[in-house]
Length: 306
Image (tube, rainbow, N blue to C red):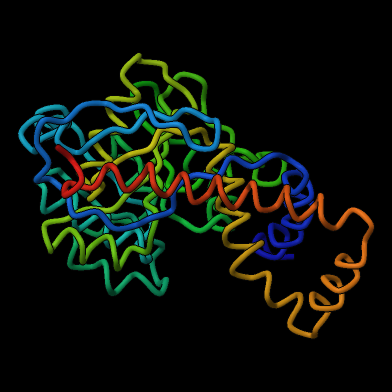
């Protein structure tokens, strides 16, 4: 049985784990006119539906500053799909030492040949900062290769937290003596790259799973800026996973489950419930919170700053 099939079978159980959990709603806007051009930066704390989050601005880390931070590092981008190609090109254009690790013969092999291509094993061996951009299924399959090269002093980065949070399915358990961080752009790799080329940036989530050196957040934010983030919203691996699964599996793919009219029938049944009015009022409260959150995020736009 393939690892991808096994992982796919585990998803329904994973969904059950978080479907009854109160999910923190955060902004999902992907565009920002700010990019590297922001001035007078400061870390802000915003209240998203009762949860306070720190927001880091790209101008906290001008190019010279993060180039100096990473001057002795080799950034190993593992995977060359949508996010892999965009993040690799952006970081390279920003002056970082980037190498790309791809499975030989995979569909991304030919595309990555011109961008300092290595086998995954070689890239893992050479990289001091390892950015795991593989699919969830591939992360599970190839984790034994990773663990061999994750020596003390290296930093492991993810762009999605599924493999870490659902380690009972993936067996992705990092060594305890390395920094483990996440930068999760809130949009496609194609958009991340096009915004970068346009002098703008994308909003991203940033999270720390392990901070061994005491510098994990600085490295994560600086690296997030280098790959094209304009604002980075501090969160946790778990919240990022829950929000992503709700958005992609629950919302984007949810229509597949109700296209036969079952959702309409369910709504009609619920509308006849004796508690319909009360239930509707609670739903409207949540929608109001989403609107309020959007208003908060819009205050960060450069044109709204005074």
